[in-house]
Image 1: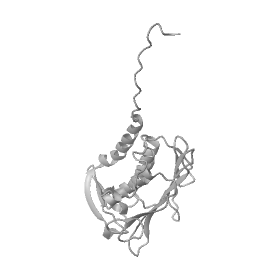
Image 2: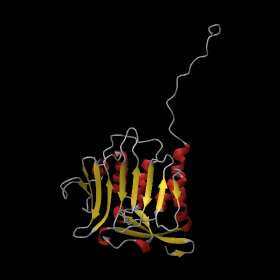
Image 3: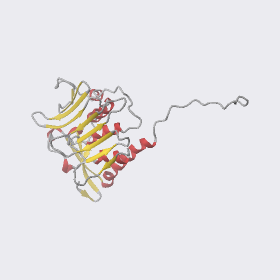
Length: 252
């Protein structure tokens, strides 16, 4: 970002699904620092692997142009099957973060019967341009399900696909709903003006502004602090009825 006297130029991009990938640290740093995911380091391999404290979930970033860059896997347990979620390189980090934030939320799902289509319907997505699922008003993004598996795809007509996200059968629906809620969110996302992708430029709104450099630097710290607070303040347990003290003379 271009800096002038303590300020930097920042671009606000909408719709967010066209903003490009962004900084991977928006996802990985909170997973490590706020949720306690551990990482292995191999200086000879250009990849990131983070593992949850219970060893049940793993995030992997592989910069492979022929495969999804982001892969999140969860192992099978006694009650649920294994599942996998993948995101292509150009998936905005804010959308991936919606998934990982919901995954690491210690309070668990607010609604186990969440409907991933609900946030899209509220945002006026419809089925007019696709036989299955729902399409964004501009027709660029669409979401569809086939049984228990879900696909998100963004593409401009007669252009290559911009990015895809795929969720295998067994992926908890409240996690997919967190993604569709972020996907439908009309709030612009911040990007470095020099790194705004050229694809679909005619279909996006870009507004630049100058902001304090300290604000850019502190945004991630504030995010880490906010997510860490969830672990510091777990949901209150159901109250246990108070038991009166034993009456004297009735002890064994």
